[in-house]
Length: 313
Image (cartoon, rainbow, N blue to C red; front, top):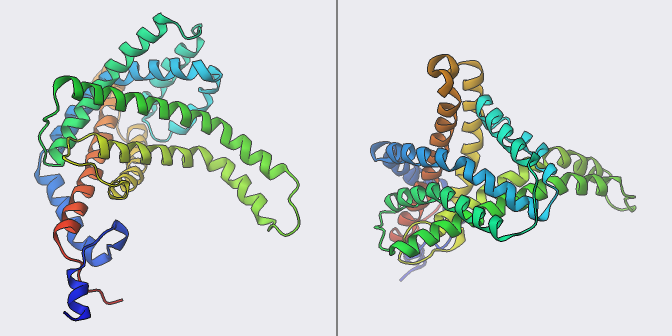
């Protein structure tokens, strides 16, 4: 067999091996599946459960954060969500966080553990809805028994909350760390532009940390959420996670602008305007999450079943 035939029979072993010719085949498949299937309906169901799980998740987050860190440092970090959430939703969540922050916090006790478990169990309803939606996207049936399924959802919810706690802590520490490094004496031989670069990173550190957190959460959700016969390598879940995170940030900002300047939810829905805005934001978020899963599904399907095409660079 000559070299060309060997190249044609070689399988794509990593998403980095995909070229633009491959993406021109994959992306139309993704678009077709997103708009011809039940993605919109599943995203709407996930948005409903996410809305119900919002405040239990916030309560669990505040309680766990207060066990290890100064609880009052969480409020300034809320500003990073201001451009991602509709103004009424941001105000409602900010007020709830402030209320929980102002409540007295005690050390780890049995009552606190019990309330945390109840809050995490309530919040895991959103995770369970996402798992069902991911099963549909990955074309797999849920065969795990009742206890394994609910424990998986609970564990994933707990990991996300712990990750959020560490992310907030890092968002507090990162600007201080960058500022401290930029203020230190820089030895000769290191470009002076490094100081201005670190200073610039200080202003964007919260967004960088948020991006990394969101990407890791989605990648883990794509890997451990659906009932797949075998777990895949993280490299196969990262493309959808990265693209979904980028699109989520962009669409959240667009939706926030739409609610603030074009739509008047309070006039249309009255007292329910804020709740509708939150639910619509969760709908967009869930749809983007399922889009990332659809990207991963089509990448895996394409690369595992189609030989690597001959390439001409």
